[in-house]
Image 1 (cartoon, rainbow, N blue to C red):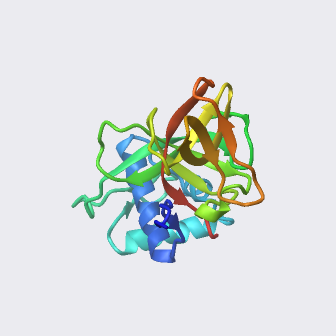
Image 2 (image 1 turned 60 degrees about the horizontal axis):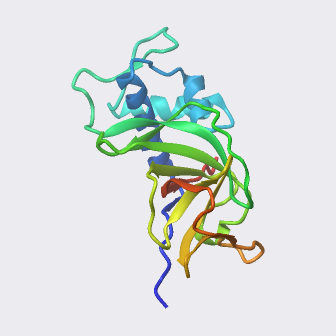
Length: 212
C-alpha cells in the first residue's frame, strides 16, 4: 500500500521560532508597519511579552535586526540589510472545522509570515477546530497554510466548502462520488454526489503548531 502523503507538521525548536520571528518582523517592515513587542507576542501566542522581547533582543545581538532606543516600534533592519530572506505575509482568514461541517468563518485575524518567493499564488491561513484529522498530524488549534485553488487531486488534504460550510479533510474521488475523508476512525467520511454544491477552496501545504 503506498504511503499516504501528509502535510509537514512543524515542531519548532527555539532557533526555528526565532527565524520565524525574524521573518514576521521583516514582513511587517516590508509592509511599512513595524511591530511592537506585544504584537510579536500576540502573533506567536507567547504567554508572556518577555518571551517575545527575548527573541527580538537575540536577533539584535546577532545582527539580524537593529533597534532604535525609546521607541515602541523601534525594531528595524540593520544598515547592511541583514540576512536575505524571501518573506511575505498571508492573511489569517479565521477558523475551519475538522470534525464535521459547520458555518465557515472568514473573520480576518491578522497576518502570518511565510518564507518563499512572492509568486502569483494566493495563500491564506486558517485555525483548525476538531479532531477528525489527527491521523494526518493536524490537531485542534493548529494553523493550516492553504494554497488557494479550486481543484485538487485524489489524496490531497483540502479545505472544502459545501454551501456556506467549510471543513478540512482528505479528498477522495471514488466511483463518481466526492469523498471528504477524515483521518480519525472515530469520524465518518462525508460523501457527496458530483452535482452537490461543493467547492474546493484550497490545498493544505503546511501545518504549524505552537508549543509555547
